[in-house]
Length: 533
Image 1 (cartoon, rainbow, N blue to C red):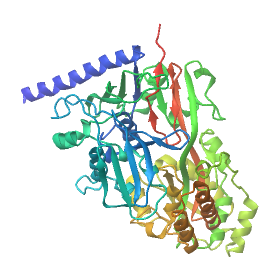
Image 2: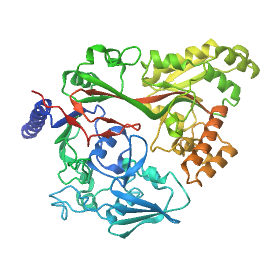
Image 3: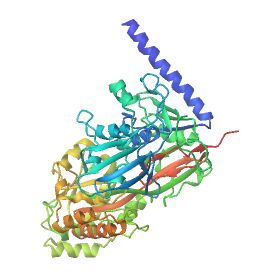
Image 4: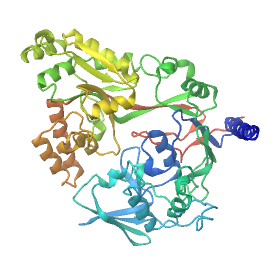
């Protein structure tokens, strides 16, 4: 027992020593980028990249065939080009893309060039029941055994039916290309011992403590001047669960950036109007772009079947007040479900807030001043109690009685998925940059619990428009169909949209080349840091 205790103590001391050394090195070294991930990182396997913190690390270690630009365009990555065919799509791979070296894996000791069979292995792996990837759905449109290598530099993917958004699905981290030898050799250890072709590779990791990535000297991409990317030598990611420590780390210069807002530090960092506080302007910058995400209140259609009631509830929500007072202007209030950027628009339309009309609609529906309506239970988690309290206040003004039901996230998800909640606070985040990703939420085939149509909304005309859109290759024509579908959702209101979120990053002024993505991917290839003197 004494020996085991000594071993445990020695291990913890070693971790603390290494972490402390790296912390000091990172604080002083302009070649190292440092941030904290309070949720930790459960895996570095792209097949399991279902959360943002995993996606950020996976993006640093792997490449996919294609990627998403900050302007939401699908652009080449490992694939230098592609062609649509009657069968589907054919990808032409770059030459000279190398996997990072792995001394413990036969065949990867010095790295090797990526070939088409690696793409086939990586994508088909998403459909392997033993891998149980949550990303297998990105291949739903692909035929069985429909991914083949025509030669070492050409991959053909055959589709079951026409599906124009398909290439956009390959921009997700799930579609990252892995080295088959590393997966097979490392087995369960591959989870934290990856082998990719991305700008960084893993130097060392200690679960629940920290992860350090080093520059991949084999990386294929160069900047416009011909300089090798990335510019950084290393990335250090702490796993400190305390948000207060993360915030202090940013202010004190130990961390180079922090993402998102938290009530604990929101008032200190931002003004009431959503700008960066004056006292932080000397050391920090606030970067923000519209996020492809919509927060909404879902309505189980069977339980509140009169659309006039749903519209009355929508009209009596002060979205602008919620955005200003509860989110410090960091969100964009809206009563439309699809973010405007996904329909080619730049300006958000102002949501309608009209208590008088809400009262009229309730009366027309046979519920004057809410009389006759049962008490509405609005389900949420602790993260959105303030939002739901504001909604409750507006609804009670028109006579609708509301009880806010707060549950742990896992319980909330289960209740919504099994139709045990009549109304519920949820959000929908785009997996890819086509509006189909939002509109598909309301298809009858996606009824919960098997799919994400938690409201059980269905419309034959809506389905017809969706099917038409999937047959159209011309983007502008497809967007017209998308707009009509969005109008149907606005008219029938199976969900009551609240606001579109924004990606919010607080970044140290010593950081240059920062890129903010509308899907909140972390782009570190072009980042530099100013050297301290």
